[in-house]
Length: 275
Image (cartoon, rainbow, N blue to C red; front, side, top):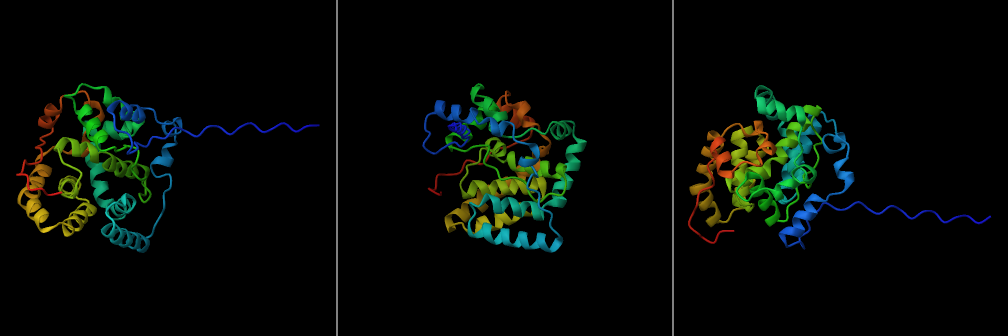
């Protein structure tokens, strides 16, 4: 008796990566909004705390030191920066969690647990140009960024803290959009100052120290004369940004939400040809 041939393997899921080869807005938006079904249905535990690793204090210290050294050597290692934030930031995340519980909008975020992933924010491409959502989509699209590229949370002890840590990680690009900060070394360092003022995460302070150590003399002068004092004021004067349900404000005018949340945009400085 002849043995039938096995059925062909199923096709691989569509990729969600916004490849650097994409250039047109239409193609980029389509790729952003047509992610694979596997991402939409991926188990919550897999995306937040699914690979949870329990560490004792000595192990936490070792991971923190190793991550700090690795991140200084290669600031592009988002996984090391994330590990540093988690292993040194538990008290700060606990305080953020308590503040969110006391805020009506923060409680809604904790209850519904929105994710900043393509499946949930891809509609921002279709919003009017003046809206916060459209500004965020332009920010991401112009840089070929994907909201799905954030590393998972691994070192938080509870699911609630894991979500807060992931939320802090995922709203980072919302803050770039709102404060009109670039993604170069100066812009990232300035945003870390704001994040420290908002959340008091040790990782943010260490990132500023590490980032400024890599500045050229011209960059250092520009940062400390213009961006650093502005970032301190901006972080202190704005509302508690971890308690904002950003996705529910996508359709609002960008300048309106900036005023509502007390946000002042990055200073306009003379063009000094600083990268």
